[in-house]
Image (cartoon, rainbow, N blue to C red; front, side, top):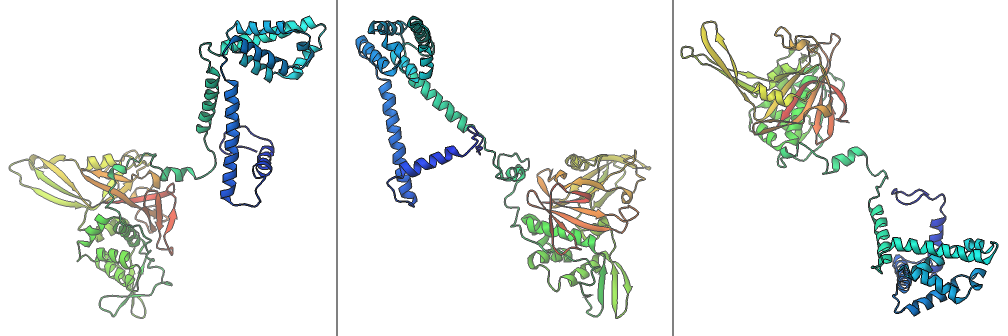
Length: 518
C-alpha cells in the first residue's frame, strides 16, 4: 500500500490495515453487538484509546521516578539486574561484582535506570553468544566493557544536571514527527492547474485594481444572428413600405460587429447606459432589443431596415418581386457606416501663427496599430499613450507657422485595426491597409485592459477574418467574432452556426479588429 499524502513508509501489503481492523473488531468492540451505529462505535473507540494512553503515561512516570538514596538505587539496580538477565554469566558472580558494576556507572553520574533500560532492550540472543565463550573471566570482562560503553554513551547523550532530559528527548522526537506530518504535501489530483489558478486569490492579477463591481451585469446566454445567405432557414423580410420583400446575402461583417456590441451591452452596465441614451439611433435600438427580447419574428426585419439605411448595399431585382441586397463589405466599412457619430478619436488642429487662422476638426473611426514581425500586441498600451499625444506639423506652403494636432479619445469605446507588414518599410505611406496580412495571435495574449487617463477600457472581443483566395483584407471571405465573457471564458459567434461555441483562451485567431468598451 502506498500512502496517499506522501507521508510514512510504503507498505508492500495490507497486513497493517487488516491487523488494525481485527483489533477493533475483536478487542475494542468485543462486548458490542455488531452491526452498530456510529455513536456507539466512537464511544467505545475513544474509551479504548483513553485507556491505552493512561497505561502508557503510568509506565513512563514509573520509569522516571527519582531515587531518594544511594542504597535504594543500588538495591533496585541489583534487583532489576538479577531479574533482567537469566543467563549463567550473572549467576556465577556474587553481589559484590554487581555492586562494582553499579559503582562503575554511578561514578560516571549516570542514572542507573537508563542502564537498566538499555539492559532490558538488549537482545538476549546476543547475551547468549557471550555465554558460549571459553571461560567465565572472558565473559565478565566483556560484560564490563559492554556496561562501560553504555555508561559512556549515556553520559554523552544526557545532561547530568537535568534529570528530565529523557522526557525532553521524547518530546523533541514527538515534535519532529508532527513537523514532518504537517510539512507533508498532498499529491492527489483534486483540480487541474488552470482551475486552481483561476479560483485562487493567491494568484496575482494585474487587472484587479481596475475592477469595478458596478460595471458588470449578470452574464447571460445570448442569441446568435443567422447569416442572410442561409436562405433555406430565413424567409425574405419586408421593408418599410410593406410591399417589397428583401433577401440579404453575406451579412457576416454586420453580424460579427453586432455580436460584440451585444455582449458589451449585456456585460457592461455603463456601456448599456451609453447606448440607451440615444433613443433615436436605430442600430443601438436593434442591439438592445437583441439582449432584452432575443431573436423574435421581427428581428430580421429590423436588421434589414438597419442595413438598408446605413450600409446602402447593392440591390438586384429577382423574380416574384423579391430584391437581393448584396451586403459584401469589409469590417472597416461597416464600422464607419454604423458608428459614424461615435468615433474612437476626434482630432483638432490649430496653427500657431497669428496670420493663419486655419482650424480643422476630423474624426477617426478606428485606430491602426502596427505590430512587429512577431505579431506581439504587448505594446498596445504604449501605442494608445503616444497616439493621443500632441503632434506638431508644418501648417502649409504659404504659412510658416506650426500646426498643433490635439487628439481626444472616446470615453466609451475603442476600435483598433491590427496590421502586420512583412516588408522592410513598415511606415510607408504608399502601403494600403487593405493589402496588409492578418496577425495570428492567441486570445490569451491580447491585452485585457487599456487605460487612458482615468478611463479604463476592457476587452470585449476580437474580429476574426477568413480571407479569400487572393489573401487580401478586402477580398470576399467570412467574418466571425470571438467574444470575451468573464476572466478566462471566450465564445465564438459565427452566423453560420446555430449557437455560440465556447473556445479555449489559447486558441489562435487571425485578428483584424479589437473592440474595447468601458
